[in-house]
Length: 223
Image 1: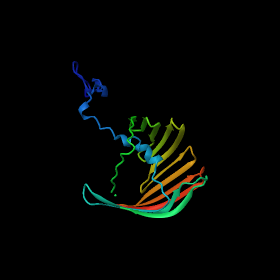
Image 2: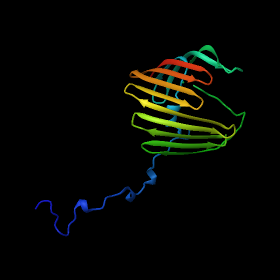
Image 3: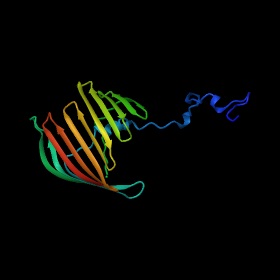
Image 4: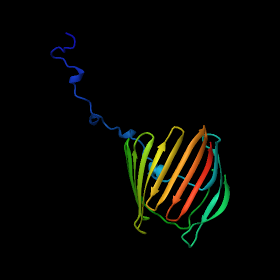
């Protein structure tokens, strides 16, 4: 009859399943870790959007695979130091043209830091400590391919300052919405909408209840 296995033979179903533990790790082809300065990159997407106040226009043009030109125009207020609790702002405008050269050899300070990162398909957890007094912890939960939730904790054991924040990153079909709220009462929202290929419209808003400071900005990014 069909479906019967003759004596002395074995079928594929009777064979033991091949587990991942039986596979040998190829240590010569391990994935390269991310750079140290990008340790918190997933958390920073939600918790540190590039908010601004006023009007911003950015234009970037690639010359070849190695060089590109970047133009930036900004019109908006600039905060200046004040002895009072209220923030003083003066109107300003500036234009920037993607070069920088600097040398900082006067202070001659050195430091050391350690970091750890654990990543899966659903979460990213990081920890960082440095002798400058900073302890930074962050956690990102990937709810789906389009939604991520993030939280972080910053502690300076020299000044005893502690700051915590929670945020989100929501990718829609034509736009990306990010926002956060921190323990100082500051709420931030950042919207980037794609109008066309290489053309993005930006909305930025920030409310600081403690300082009674409110910022709103909009802009365009080309290239």
